[in-house]
Image (tube, rainbow, N blue to C red):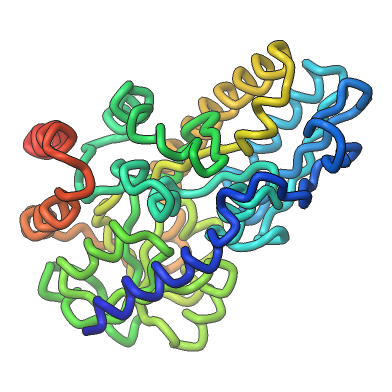
Length: 351
């Protein structure tokens, strides 16, 4: 019954957020110098274009630093005719609100976990399936493949244009001193764990035997501090950069889900750009992607030791039981992905 309630909550929020998905004359563009009542999104007479980029973490997070890199390149290459304004820490909304803002033309750009886009196009979240990749290089190869590109095709129907695939790392589980560490699959059964609004991660936690709860990221630290949740799951850089070591005692390296992130722009804005502007935006996004990937990989390698120095107990459970039960997640999503994609994913998991 709880599982049905969680799914219902996700679907209800999506319904509310997307009620204006395909309105043709939405006049809430946040781009400066662009009154869309009688003009195109970007007027030929406009001397300056302003793009607002919002995301849920702070500016020191790798996605924040990558967005800063994107800003620097775009403004330099366009001689400041395109300005990029960065709004971290959910100043323009949390992840689901930011993505809905792209859909409803209230936000210009955002970067968020691929799984968070699955509420609009289920296939776009396939990279979050449990234990699909063994390392970063394996994951990047998939994210840059035609299989992933095809999986994202439907997002354009919702005014979402994917520019690049940022990286957030492999998701791991932290727990409080109250419930102890996760050394085995048995240890996770029955615990209440905070997750993002990601149906694949939710189903993965159900398969592990945990009870997943959705909660906005900006309120997570406080919720952990007050004991609302005794467990949460996030990549190592997120755990360290947000000082979760102050409110969680154990870190279990489960690497249960690869967390790719889509760096996106409104499709209507992108199509209104000139060919030269599109090229600059695309190239800047790819350069920011490469910057982000290198940073995430290095932080993942370095921060486990730093978390240990901060007092966290690092655990390395046997992952085979986790991988075995998580095969049910693939079965659960079979009707959505179709036989061709499922065959590819099964092959990838068996490597």
